[in-house]
Image (cartoon, rainbow, N blue to C red; front, side, top):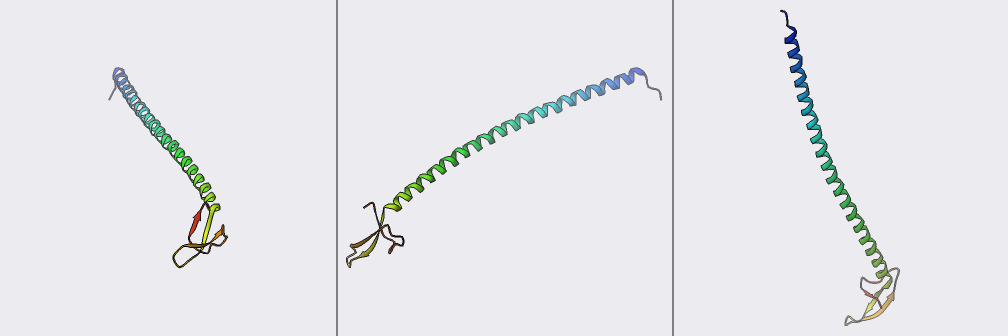
Length: 107
């Protein structure tokens, strides 16, 4: 079987056209994928930034709470004794080992 030069040239042109078509399709898919990944990265970046802000705010609140708790502990006076009517009869100032679970704040 003998092929004509024109037939071979037509087949090459068809092949070349197909290659260019698929090359364009592949490039378009790559471009869409890159855009999608950029969008996902930007969303992730926003989430991470928001999380960082929330963590910073939470740490700040915890530090404030810790300072306030320390100040409060410094002001506690433990109720050591009650009379028979439930009135306080004795306070111990800032005990290292409190005698009860009752306390008066800020005296």
